[in-house]
Length: 324
Ligand code: FO1
Image (cartoon, rainbow, N blue to C red; front, side):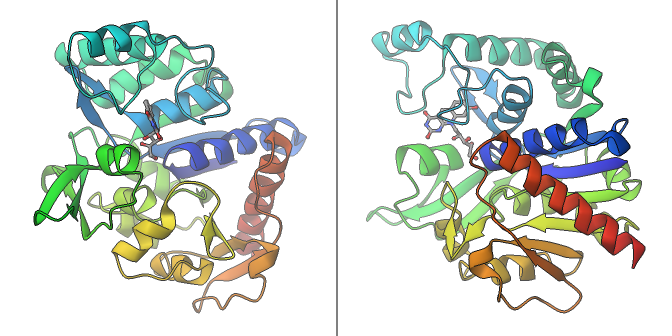
């Protein structure tokens, strides 16, 4: 089975780890392939290095190197380099980069500087994490540098800050007036992205942030049209349970775009291409947009096995929709 998935950071990566576990334990799906279209709106240049948080979170999580408690960054990490940068008075100190993580950013920045595309760089990093051997391809949504910025007003009038400063330093506690994706006007889908949507057997939307992760990927020219036009069923997983995000600040992001924090409202954001929608048992009676088939089940990814069950249920719904 050819599976294509859009993904943000922590929630998406954990879902995808569950998907791989489900494929590994299902003989009929043994030679399936998974193509992941990763969000690059979170990307930021720090200390002269290009950092791609959502791509790295997918790589580290699927590559079994992620700091499990955080969901991002590396396990068994030291912070000597960042500490020295702080001692040298080089900002920022609010975004903590570990020593091994710096290795990723140095290599990526070196290769980008040599003229390699972000797609090529991501493929090299994916090889280091053994993804090709498992039939997994990670594509950045675009090779054009883009950055999500957030318009906030801390009292001195509206100003735009980088998404990471809003998400990490402000903890999304300052209301976002709107999101602006710098560079998106020049963005084109990265090689293979639109094809992966068009030729998939099933397209999955993990429980990533619908505004600043999935929503950003949908803003890449051609992606939404490809999702509308693909013969593959598109099945999503609600990122909200009883109106609350399982983690992160999806509710603050939805409020910023005037959308209520319910699984139905999120499904409505995708209604022009969505075929199936998994909701938690707590939202079993959620009203669905016309044309969307929902299924209720526990959606908390408490461990890899639970994530595998959720991913399996999403695939099963996709197969069911493909048959009908
Ligand atoms: N998140 C935090 O809350 N605090 C951090 O200091 C932080 C550092 C960081 C470094 C590398 C990286 O790949 C991710 C990092 N994150 C941190 C998570 C990041 O802000 C989020 O994973 C996404 O960008 C939002 O989906």
